[in-house]
Image (cartoon, rainbow, N blue to C red):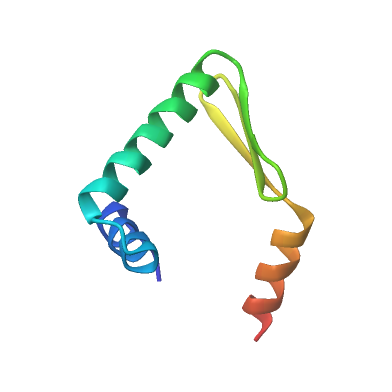
Length: 77
């Protein structure tokens, strides 16, 4: 299974009870902010979740240890 933009917006809207248009606006803005930060050589760090960094055109994603363990367990089940 994979999620695209439309299904992500729909699922976040369902879970938060926000309108899909509002969810889409927030997600697009968040991605714009992150893109601008990465383009200027910065990094995006969400404590306890992930770190995004970029070198040239390559974006590196580092997940937190707890998130890696959680998903490793769900993949084994």
